[in-house]
Length: 447
Image (tube, rainbow, N blue to C red; front, top):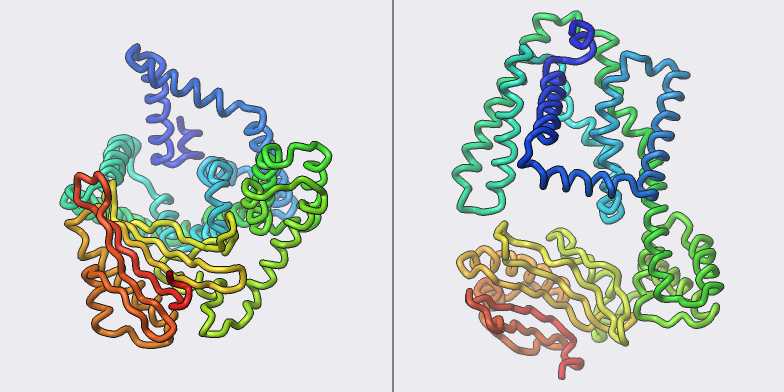
């Protein structure tokens, strides 16, 4: 036991003991058959050849990192425990978040920064010093329960008082742990400010930084795999499919954003010849080049779609690519939830028009929870005001602002622009929900 105490802190030993207790309970208790079946299914999925290939590659890469650090004198056997915890808490979990990494290009940067933030430093300080093993065994399930209850209470506003109490309780305990850690540091200042402590703190950020290239290439590999699956449905001829694969790797290489953009066109465009495949890829490259240097558009004709789609970025309403579908060009944002209800009020932004010019800018507000409509209208007003001032180059009239705040319908022409606020009740709705649209379009294009 003493040797274990030298390797693991009481907090880590408490975690290991509880894991063993839970595993034994699942194995021994007869009523846990459903849990056993779920675990079997999880293991079956876990041991699929494709997943195993990724995990083996990950382990080989991590071992290569460790070998490099050993050669540089920056890793020794005393770092094994911290490395194992990092392996399961960062490296392993990041592999299963690869789709999240694909969607959020800043994920990798945040992964490193999160290791260096003040909160990470505080967590390290708290983790250095632990209580007695018995105390840690009692605290762990209590704190875990508080965390689970807090997460559960966030799903419904009626649990707000409970969530506030739990958050305050967690804050008080965190402050107590930080205070206890600071006290122990003051008492043992020489042992804390040592080379060993410095290595303990830096090993996790260092491993994370060196791990990023693996995640980057895994993201690229995963994206190409998804594209190859789509190719099987879009290009029936095997030789043309091979040509498409090779061409994509040559033209797009590591630029997976362009690769994804091209692959999104596969379901709606025919690729019956080598020329069509090659041309479809070149079109994506041309569009990307135009987006970097958007052409100026005469005010009387409309707006640059590549500028218009970024207008509400600060409101988290950035659209995807401006693209063509069945003869229509458009870009749209995801629906942004405006509250935390199960069926929340939400808002979205659309840019519509022709290949080179946007003709219509549209905000769509869906009100499902009528009781919270006033809060939703505040967002509708702020986004609508920004959109109006971009589209017209003028300040928002007070009357229009009042209409945006209340959802009052209007339909008028202001010079070259057609301004509309349209409201429509949801059909067959039992909660009285409705949709409100704020549309700014070129007057000549409105029928």
